[in-house]
Amino acid sequence: MPLFAGLDLGTTHTKLVVLDEKGNLLHQAKSSYTKGTTTELDPQEIRDLAEKLLLDAFSVIGKRDTVIYLSLSAAMHSLMLVDEKANPLTPLSTWADTSSLLLVNQYKQDPRVRKLVSETGTPFHPMTPLAKLWQLRLSNPALLDMAFKCVGIKEYIWHHFTGFWETDCSTAAATGMYDPLRADWHPLALEFTGVKKEQLPVVQAVEWMRKENRFQMERLQLLPVLGGSDGCLAQIGSKAMQPGTASLTIGTSGAIRVVQSAFKADPDSGLFSYQLDATHFVCGGPTNNGGIVLQWWEEEIMGKSAPLGMLLDSFEQEAASVMPGCEGLVCLPYFGGERAPVWDAGASGIFAGVRFQHRQAHFKRALVEGICFIFRQLLERIEQVYGPVHRIVASGGFTRSRWWVQVMSDVLERTIEVGEEDADASTLGAIAIAMKAAGYLNEWTELEAHLPFGYNSIYPNDMNRTIYRNQYQEFLRLCHF
Image (cartoon, rainbow, N blue to C red; front, side, top):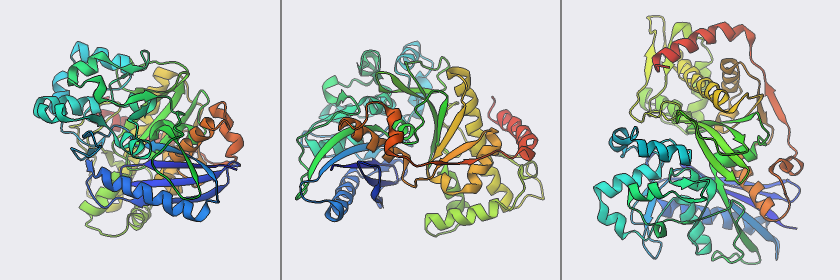
């Protein structure tokens, strides 16, 4: 019987999950990066780690002649240039790269840029390959002209496995250059960046499969499946594909999303709309400021040095010692700039209402509450544009903290469901695509039968409702909404 593997190429580590055809978890592992920064990574390190994860896993669990469907998930908005032999000409730029900030501020109100945003569904922001390539066209046109291909980490790894320069529509949608109605690269994006269509990967469906590949493993038959972007795949892996169901994810950054049956861009450009397939569009808003805010506070403000898990555990213990509302202390946690709904890479963080009685623990809890206020703001905008949300499913590293999920539930005044399965939602989404490519799924909602894990529900504490409503109004005042 076949095996199904999901390989997730993230911004801090690469993860691998392997299931059998009945949904039983056979293997999961991850490797963290040792090179690069928040804004730039080493693509060759990621390639080598991905190979090692696969070889280590299937040397143990693979039997002779086993067929393995391998599907890829990847963080959105990455960009690198490569030559004809696939050698990197640049580092891998991540979503956190803000080098095009001045250009974005100059052109974001331009009528032709606004037209492009309305037709791609991707807000104009330094995170996008559109802005990065446009900036490169102005700052180093010779380098851009020299590039054989302009790709992200997913296309680089896919080419390493298959020899083809291809991407999927969900990853293409996040570039700010893809027109879902044309199902092709947008002419305006090509004009603004000066990039030729031949320099970009060919766009295929998420379940596109290559039976031929260059990555061979002894005794095993590997069938690569293209997969999708981590955000869209988290929606599938969270089993949140029904109308009115939101997927809320917090890792390094965060996002909340819903699914629509047709393309619909936010008229105010506050939310994204990314195509998953012909009848599913994942719509929502991302935030720069997730777990990275807590990590920054512990390492840079507190001066602590320890494994990340230990740092965050101590953070939670101290923050949880303070009563909800932090005795009036409110945080606007835009310490990494912000994406939705303000789309201001130059935004900065604020603590308001600071008094003598506030201790370190108050500031820590205020950081967490501020992140949760961001999600309340995004949820309200999603409901304004895309309709009521009746169910919220959470995923990502923050779900390991029952306390943080409880704070989120209290702030949103909604029940939040957390999957009992510990595997990463984006990786499970990649596996769902592999299953569909192999003929095991016809519809995304059929994943339930193959991944029959349940959910734990966290209910809002009504005693905190008034406190958080008042604090939220102060949060809105701070961000001018």
